[in-house]
Length: 281
Image (cartoon, rainbow, N blue to C red; front, side):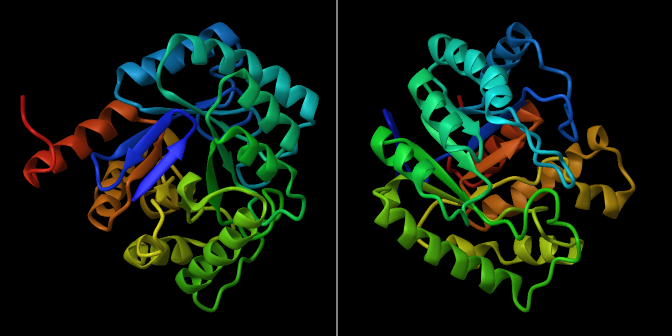
Protein backbone atom coordinates (compact mmCIF):
# COMPACT_ATOMS: atom_id res chain seq x y z
CA UNK A 1 0.00 0.00 0.00
CA UNK A 2 1.55 3.24 -1.20
CA UNK A 3 1.36 6.70 0.37
CA UNK A 4 2.69 9.78 -1.40
CA UNK A 5 3.12 13.34 -0.17
CA UNK A 6 4.99 15.39 -2.73
CA UNK A 7 8.54 13.98 -2.85
CA UNK A 8 7.91 11.63 0.06
CA UNK A 9 6.79 8.09 -0.63
CA UNK A 10 6.16 5.25 1.82
CA UNK A 11 5.15 1.70 1.00
CA UNK A 12 3.30 -0.13 3.77
CA UNK A 13 3.95 -2.44 5.52
CA UNK A 14 7.17 -0.76 6.64
CA UNK A 15 8.69 0.31 9.99
CA UNK A 16 6.23 2.47 11.87
CA UNK A 17 6.29 6.19 11.07
CA UNK A 18 6.35 8.55 14.04
CA UNK A 19 4.96 12.08 13.67
CA UNK A 20 6.24 14.53 16.26
CA UNK A 21 3.81 17.13 17.58
CA UNK A 22 4.93 20.77 17.49
CA UNK A 23 2.24 23.16 18.72
CA UNK A 24 2.98 26.85 18.24
CA UNK A 25 -0.03 27.83 20.32
CA UNK A 26 -0.57 29.37 23.76
CA UNK A 27 -3.38 26.99 24.73
CA UNK A 28 -2.80 23.41 23.52
CA UNK A 29 -3.62 20.94 26.28
CA UNK A 30 -0.13 19.49 26.76
CA UNK A 31 2.51 21.90 25.44
CA UNK A 32 0.63 25.17 24.97
CA UNK A 33 2.91 28.19 25.28
CA UNK A 34 6.15 26.21 25.06
CA UNK A 35 7.03 27.00 21.44
CA UNK A 36 5.48 30.37 20.62
CA UNK A 37 8.91 31.78 19.74
CA UNK A 38 9.73 30.69 16.15
CA UNK A 39 13.40 30.01 16.90
CA UNK A 40 12.50 27.83 19.84
CA UNK A 41 9.89 26.03 17.75
CA UNK A 42 12.38 25.33 14.97
CA UNK A 43 14.91 24.01 17.49
CA UNK A 44 12.23 21.72 18.92
CA UNK A 45 11.37 20.48 15.43
CA UNK A 46 15.02 19.60 14.80
CA UNK A 47 15.12 17.85 18.18
CA UNK A 48 12.08 15.75 17.24
CA UNK A 49 13.77 14.68 14.00
CA UNK A 50 16.92 13.73 15.93
CA UNK A 51 14.73 11.60 18.22
CA UNK A 52 13.40 9.67 15.23
CA UNK A 53 10.38 11.56 13.93
CA UNK A 54 9.91 11.25 10.17
CA UNK A 55 7.12 13.84 10.20
CA UNK A 56 6.78 17.12 12.11
CA UNK A 57 3.17 18.21 12.62
CA UNK A 58 2.96 21.97 13.21
CA UNK A 59 -0.24 23.37 14.68
CA UNK A 60 -1.13 27.03 15.10
CA UNK A 61 -4.67 26.60 16.43
CA UNK A 62 -5.53 24.49 19.46
CA UNK A 63 -8.26 21.92 18.81
CA UNK A 64 -8.57 20.66 22.38
CA UNK A 65 -12.16 20.38 23.65
CA UNK A 66 -13.62 23.84 24.15
CA UNK A 67 -10.76 25.66 22.41
CA UNK A 68 -11.50 29.09 20.98
CA UNK A 69 -11.01 29.48 17.21
CA UNK A 70 -8.06 31.47 15.85
CA UNK A 71 -8.38 33.81 12.88
CA UNK A 72 -6.46 33.05 9.71
CA UNK A 73 -4.00 35.94 9.98
CA UNK A 74 -2.90 34.87 13.46
CA UNK A 75 -2.59 31.21 12.47
CA UNK A 76 -0.46 32.20 9.48
CA UNK A 77 1.74 34.37 11.70
CA UNK A 78 2.37 31.48 14.07
CA UNK A 79 2.87 28.70 11.55
CA UNK A 80 4.46 29.88 8.31
CA UNK A 81 7.87 31.04 9.63
CA UNK A 82 8.32 27.69 11.39
CA UNK A 83 7.28 25.71 8.30
CA UNK A 84 9.64 27.67 6.08
CA UNK A 85 12.60 27.29 8.44
CA UNK A 86 12.12 23.58 9.11
CA UNK A 87 11.57 22.80 5.44
CA UNK A 88 15.00 24.34 4.77
CA UNK A 89 16.71 22.53 7.66
CA UNK A 90 15.38 18.96 7.50
CA UNK A 91 14.32 16.28 5.07
CA UNK A 92 11.47 15.25 7.36
CA UNK A 93 7.96 15.55 5.98
CA UNK A 94 6.46 18.82 7.26
CA UNK A 95 2.81 18.59 8.18
CA UNK A 96 0.48 21.44 9.11
CA UNK A 97 -2.51 20.83 11.36
CA UNK A 98 -5.11 23.25 10.02
CA UNK A 99 -8.76 23.56 9.04
CA UNK A 100 -8.28 26.64 6.87
CA UNK A 101 -7.74 26.53 3.11
CA UNK A 102 -5.71 29.75 3.18
CA UNK A 103 -3.34 28.40 5.82
CA UNK A 104 -3.01 25.09 3.97
CA UNK A 105 -2.19 26.85 0.71
CA UNK A 106 0.41 29.14 2.33
CA UNK A 107 1.97 26.23 4.23
CA UNK A 108 2.31 24.16 1.07
CA UNK A 109 3.94 27.13 -0.68
CA UNK A 110 6.35 27.45 2.29
CA UNK A 111 7.47 23.82 2.00
CA UNK A 112 4.93 21.66 3.85
CA UNK A 113 4.01 18.35 2.24
CA UNK A 114 1.10 17.13 4.37
CA UNK A 115 -2.12 18.73 5.60
CA UNK A 116 -3.62 17.32 8.79
CA UNK A 117 -7.31 18.23 8.68
CA UNK A 118 -9.51 17.56 11.72
CA UNK A 119 -12.49 18.98 9.82
CA UNK A 120 -12.78 16.47 7.01
CA UNK A 121 -16.57 16.77 7.10
CA UNK A 122 -16.11 20.13 5.39
CA UNK A 123 -18.60 21.49 2.85
CA UNK A 124 -16.05 23.85 1.25
CA UNK A 125 -13.63 21.85 -0.96
CA UNK A 126 -11.01 24.62 -1.31
CA UNK A 127 -8.58 23.00 1.12
CA UNK A 128 -8.88 19.71 -0.76
CA UNK A 129 -8.22 21.49 -4.05
CA UNK A 130 -5.04 23.04 -2.60
CA UNK A 131 -3.87 19.58 -1.53
CA UNK A 132 -4.65 18.15 -4.96
CA UNK A 133 -2.85 20.96 -6.79
CA UNK A 134 0.30 20.52 -4.68
CA UNK A 135 0.32 16.72 -4.81
CA UNK A 136 0.50 16.84 -1.01
CA UNK A 137 -0.51 14.24 1.53
CA UNK A 138 -3.75 14.59 3.45
CA UNK A 139 -4.88 13.29 6.85
CA UNK A 140 -8.61 12.59 6.77
CA UNK A 141 -9.78 12.65 10.39
CA UNK A 142 -13.13 11.82 11.93
CA UNK A 143 -14.67 14.30 14.36
CA UNK A 144 -18.22 14.57 15.63
CA UNK A 145 -19.10 18.25 16.05
CA UNK A 146 -16.50 21.01 16.40
CA UNK A 147 -13.75 21.55 18.99
CA UNK A 148 -16.16 23.81 20.87
CA UNK A 149 -18.99 21.26 20.97
CA UNK A 150 -17.48 17.83 20.30
CA UNK A 151 -17.45 16.60 23.90
CA UNK A 152 -21.05 17.69 24.62
CA UNK A 153 -22.75 14.28 24.80
CA UNK A 154 -21.34 12.57 21.67
CA UNK A 155 -23.59 9.72 20.49
CA UNK A 156 -23.02 6.67 18.27
CA UNK A 157 -24.88 3.43 17.68
CA UNK A 158 -21.71 1.71 16.40
CA UNK A 159 -18.69 4.00 16.64
CA UNK A 160 -16.34 1.72 14.68
CA UNK A 161 -18.84 1.13 11.89
CA UNK A 162 -19.80 4.79 11.69
CA UNK A 163 -16.18 5.95 11.51
CA UNK A 164 -15.45 3.37 8.79
CA UNK A 165 -18.49 4.54 6.79
CA UNK A 166 -17.39 8.16 7.24
CA UNK A 167 -13.98 7.32 5.75
CA UNK A 168 -15.52 5.71 2.68
CA UNK A 169 -17.90 8.63 2.07
CA UNK A 170 -15.19 11.26 2.52
CA UNK A 171 -12.78 9.38 0.26
CA UNK A 172 -15.30 9.73 -2.55
CA UNK A 173 -15.53 13.49 -1.90
CA UNK A 174 -11.74 13.79 -1.91
CA UNK A 175 -11.39 11.96 -5.21
CA UNK A 176 -14.05 14.22 -6.70
CA UNK A 177 -11.88 17.20 -5.65
CA UNK A 178 -8.77 15.69 -7.25
CA UNK A 179 -7.08 14.13 -4.19
CA UNK A 180 -6.00 10.58 -5.00
CA UNK A 181 -6.33 7.68 -2.57
CA UNK A 182 -2.54 7.33 -2.49
CA UNK A 183 -2.34 10.80 -0.88
CA UNK A 184 -4.58 9.94 2.07
CA UNK A 185 -4.00 8.77 5.64
CA UNK A 186 -7.02 7.92 7.82
CA UNK A 187 -7.28 9.11 11.44
CA UNK A 188 -10.18 7.82 13.60
CA UNK A 189 -9.99 10.97 15.73
CA UNK A 190 -9.48 9.59 19.22
CA UNK A 191 -10.86 12.17 21.65
CA UNK A 192 -12.65 14.21 18.98
CA UNK A 193 -16.34 13.85 19.76
CA UNK A 194 -15.94 10.55 21.63
CA UNK A 195 -16.50 9.40 25.18
CA UNK A 196 -14.03 7.20 27.05
CA UNK A 197 -16.02 4.15 25.94
CA UNK A 198 -16.01 5.30 22.29
CA UNK A 199 -12.24 5.80 22.36
CA UNK A 200 -11.64 2.34 23.80
CA UNK A 201 -14.02 0.79 21.24
CA UNK A 202 -12.11 2.46 18.40
CA UNK A 203 -8.78 1.24 19.75
CA UNK A 204 -10.18 -2.29 20.01
CA UNK A 205 -11.63 -1.97 16.49
CA UNK A 206 -8.50 -0.75 14.74
CA UNK A 207 -8.23 -3.95 12.68
CA UNK A 208 -11.58 -3.10 11.11
CA UNK A 209 -10.42 0.39 10.19
CA UNK A 210 -7.06 -0.95 8.98
CA UNK A 211 -8.89 -3.06 6.41
CA UNK A 212 -10.13 0.11 4.62
CA UNK A 213 -7.19 0.04 2.21
CA UNK A 214 -5.40 3.16 3.43
CA UNK A 215 -2.75 3.60 6.14
CA UNK A 216 -4.10 4.55 9.56
CA UNK A 217 -2.66 7.46 11.54
CA UNK A 218 -3.35 7.28 15.26
CA UNK A 219 -3.19 10.16 17.73
CA UNK A 220 -3.64 9.03 21.33
CA UNK A 221 -0.64 10.75 22.87
CA UNK A 222 -1.34 12.12 26.38
CA UNK A 223 -5.07 12.41 25.65
CA UNK A 224 -7.66 13.02 28.33
CA UNK A 225 -9.16 9.53 28.24
CA UNK A 226 -5.83 8.27 29.62
CA UNK A 227 -6.06 10.86 32.36
CA UNK A 228 -9.57 9.67 33.21
CA UNK A 229 -8.44 6.05 33.38
CA UNK A 230 -5.38 6.66 35.56
CA UNK A 231 -5.90 10.03 37.21
CA UNK A 232 -2.76 11.28 35.44
CA UNK A 233 -1.82 14.77 34.27
CA UNK A 234 -0.75 15.17 30.60
CA UNK A 235 2.98 14.86 31.31
CA UNK A 236 2.34 11.65 33.26
CA UNK A 237 0.58 9.78 30.43
CA UNK A 238 3.57 8.60 28.41
CA UNK A 239 3.41 4.97 29.52
CA UNK A 240 -0.20 4.47 28.52
CA UNK A 241 0.35 6.43 25.30
CA UNK A 242 3.21 4.14 24.29
CA UNK A 243 1.17 1.07 25.27
CA UNK A 244 -1.61 2.23 22.93
CA UNK A 245 0.93 2.68 20.13
CA UNK A 246 2.19 -0.88 20.54
CA UNK A 247 -1.38 -2.21 20.64
CA UNK A 248 -2.20 -0.24 17.51
CA UNK A 249 0.91 -1.40 15.66
CA UNK A 250 -0.21 -4.99 16.24
CA UNK A 251 -3.57 -4.02 14.71
CA UNK A 252 -1.93 -2.69 11.53
CA UNK A 253 -1.60 1.03 12.28
CA UNK A 254 1.41 2.52 10.50
CA UNK A 255 1.67 6.18 11.58
CA UNK A 256 1.68 7.58 15.13
CA UNK A 257 1.22 11.23 16.12
CA UNK A 258 2.97 11.70 19.47
CA UNK A 259 4.49 14.15 21.93
CA UNK A 260 7.05 11.69 23.33
CA UNK A 261 8.95 10.82 20.18
CA UNK A 262 12.07 9.17 21.60
CA UNK A 263 10.15 6.82 23.87
CA UNK A 264 7.63 5.88 21.19
CA UNK A 265 10.28 5.27 18.53
CA UNK A 266 12.28 3.07 20.89
CA UNK A 267 9.24 0.99 21.84
CA UNK A 268 8.08 0.54 18.25
CA UNK A 269 11.57 -0.38 17.02
CA UNK A 270 11.89 -2.94 19.82
CA UNK A 271 8.59 -4.46 18.78
CA UNK A 272 9.79 -4.63 15.18
CA UNK A 273 13.07 -6.28 16.19
CA UNK A 274 11.20 -8.92 18.17
CA UNK A 275 8.90 -9.49 15.19
CA UNK A 276 11.91 -9.62 12.80
CA UNK A 277 10.58 -6.54 10.98
CA UNK A 278 13.69 -4.43 11.64
CA UNK A 279 17.27 -5.63 11.43
CA UNK A 280 19.54 -5.24 14.44
CA UNK A 281 22.80 -3.37 13.98
